[in-house]
Picture 1 (cartoon, each protein chain N blue to C red):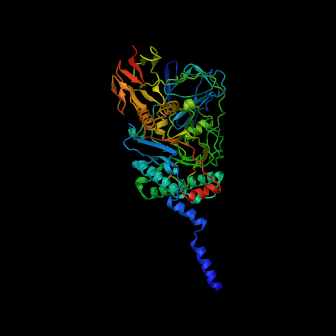
Picture 2: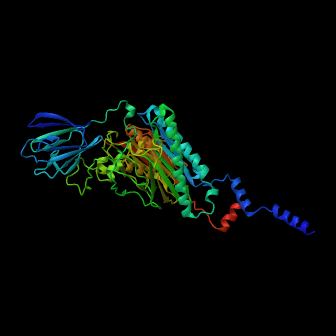
Picture 3: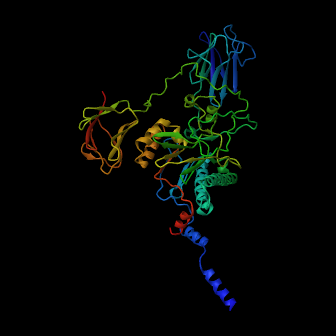
Length: 262
Length: 307
């Protein structure tokens, strides 16, 4: 279960387990987490917990709520986030769910809805194409006690992590970058960086191979064409072959060299 | 004399096969099923992943009948395997049996669509009842269930029924669209504005489905019909794929390797395993090779006698 460590001026005051669906913070004593400080509003913020996820929402407090130094209206809490209310700090801890066996992690499970469900306010899926016939199915709401949140407008704060770059930087990717240099033909001299997880080379409809970027290195596999490309003069088999620094690839009549960037 | 003539006339009439009989004979010769010959190319691949010892996913297809089914089972004691296996075999067999030329005789396209939706609903309900009953009987199977994606291709359309968080995607003109919407807690949160799609990626509430086949006496299957174009590539997959790799990577893979469907499937599974392989991963790729419109009208019927 997720928890918070409340502290002020470096002194730890207490530890709070987020067991309730709604945990309130504020100066007034009725709050779940009373914070006795004039900079804190009577009802300052609330933490909504849905199973293993928690969100903090500022309740229009006078001095605002900070997460990791940035003012927020509503924020999806990540492990080690630091919430600031007045002069008090709350550190949020949520380790990955401890599974009883390794195989339980990522296991699909059914979640049962409570008997009395509020009617749904379901937004249509943004990407789904229009079906030929309108569906009869309806989707009902999740928890009953949930106060429906107003749909978020443009987020007031910058996202805490930068958006994923176009080439998905994968921590598992090989540490070294690589590229191909074209040695013959019209594009001779050109270099192609192998930043994506998949790069196809060759001539579609004639001879195509793919170079995949995997945690263990770069591999070339034949995709289409009656004739297979050669690596250092040896024809590729049906299997993937790992590329070694300075391997010479010949495909669709073009010669190119694979190399690791310094 | 008059009677003899009547008798002779009757004999002649009796021994001339009726038009109906001829049509039925053609059906019988061809087995009665709709035949989508050389229309669909189907490649399936299922893998236990790198963490789970057992594979509780199941895939089954009958390309010539336009049928593709994928299921991701859940339950203790590896009963998930039982549930998903029951679902795929029951549904593909049930569809093959009930989706015949007989039942489709005389129906126009709209009526055929409506019937296809009913048939998919019914077959899912039947599978649900069977799995539920089996779960009651065997304590090791108690509570077992499965997600489901069922595809039925006919007359240039596709009817898809789904329960749970296994998905159907479509690649058309190099654009990947997610066709089914997950029946999951996370999706409902996204729909009601509780959590953004970006934040959902780091949610700890993944893999919690709100619907499954076999866990209750009744199941609500979500069914839709879509028009299909030649060169469309459909991807049925369990969450072991989309939980490990992003949609952008799935799209890039399908675009880059679309000339080689087997390699596309292998690459998707490999990418999921490279990213951690934390769950069973199954993919089924269906490529539409050509138009499969149904010929209707008098001459179409006449032609069918001579096939």
